[in-house]
Image (cartoon, rainbow, N blue to C red):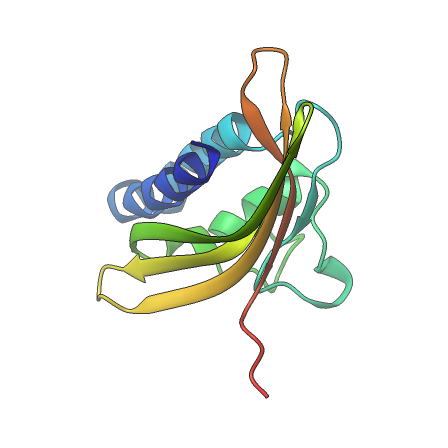
Length: 148
């Protein structure tokens, strides 16, 4: 399942950081991006949760990698979302659509860190099948829940 692969990848990035610091996390995150996202298919429409200003949108793998691990001078505001000690990722579907080789999902993703702190975000993912039939993320939009 594509959502599970994303969650497992996020956990792997966090664990790699704890063992191999930023260099270890960067290698794992790059592999996760190659396995889960569709950068090999073309542009990926990526709007991460905690990005803003001129760097809100990340259509390149370099921008996504920086979001997940930080430590890139070209993205000075990135703190490394993927290196926050994540231990569990669960998702709850609000709605989905499948048509041909395209699937779109939206719902909530609950991430638990090593201190049992929970972060809940609203996500929309668009997937496209690659030539091997694997679903790849080609649209990733994430935001914190609205607080009136």
